Length: 564
Image (cartoon, rainbow, N blue to C red; front, side, top):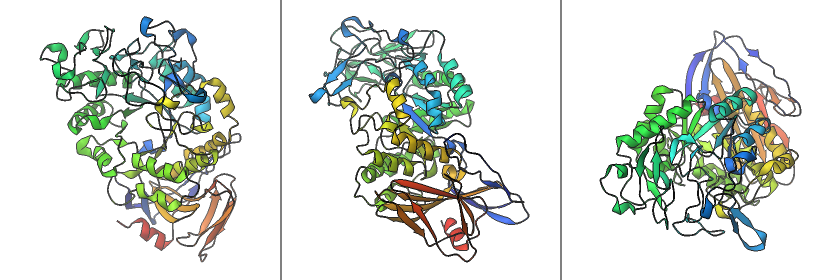
């Protein structure tokens, strides 16, 4: 849905109040009104999923909550548990299982909720092979695009998409109970990570290994088997029909997007997990299959779950390219904002950067995306180097991410600057553990993130409001987020300072009269009807969010908001 402007009738203005909970600041509630006067309806999106903030974690690398499911002796000659990659100066990565599970996530549900997150996105839950891959090229510390010696600890080598991997569940905690407890105990939604492009490593095996190159159905029947053959040597026999006869990613099986049985297999599998409590979907490697496959799959899922929110990974920094996935004829899914990631890291990894340089990815009005306000914004994840910046750089990046357009996604450990700047086989995916989570609770990044994330959690303007940029210059930025829809009115004025000193940031255009409320401490900034400017002191590496809970009356601001 496109950012909206229209007219609607409202009524009597009513300001709803909220309280501070503990030491976490919450934003004042927007107004509700209904009067005979006409007011403008303005928002960036009316999609309720825009209220979400997502904490993304590799389940195996988060917390080991149940050592009984570690299977430390699994794999025999090709052991699957704890396979370190050793680098110089004591550096390590690991390509084996390390113990993280559903119980570890559940044990820290309150921790995730308290930070201000509303959803958890876990790596795929499906059954993966039980050994390290003995084919391909052997992976070594710091290398990329090699799978030899690796395991499916990450979940992306599915062999049975109807079955949860044994490393994740506990005797008294299956997937359905896990999602139910996330919701009932912590009000956290679950994002299901799905794969349609590939299965497990399927050829170049040096000796026979169970499950590799195979797919099983809901009854544990074998429905596809690569039989350790190069894709070009696959035949027309039934067990080869799920696969394309061409290589794609390393030695992974490349699934046949033109086979109706493949589409039905994934439709049935993912509907199973949606019925058991998954709330939204993230699609892996969407660009590796044509649009027509994803259109059919997403249509099938939405036929049962009409309001299902779906976002995808299309690993490209070309906005025009990734925007194709957002178009209705291609499935109409949101995407992870890779161009945004590039701009965000360029600004916050470099203290000398200019805030002006961050504007390039927003595409607020040019129609590039179906709706830019519904994109998933992030600065790093498991498939790239973690953001390489200081604690202050992370604070600045989070202040931006939780106030600018889009739905924020934070990668586990970012709240303590975990494994700074490290890529996948350099420590990006290292085990976090309970001890680091306890340390995080007093970490400066965690504290600042908790503040701004909870402000967004309680501000409809920051979640859904149309963004109007004011001044972006040097170390400071200012912009509005405006939400006026269905009797609710809230405008957020966001002021950002990424410098080492406090700054007085002045807004001298589009100033609207009224009682502006500081979302952090509830201080009032009164603006008179004839007042032309507003100056606010913003601390070093800080953010101010001022909220106006009434309809806008500044004609120039309203005129800009309704510009095409």
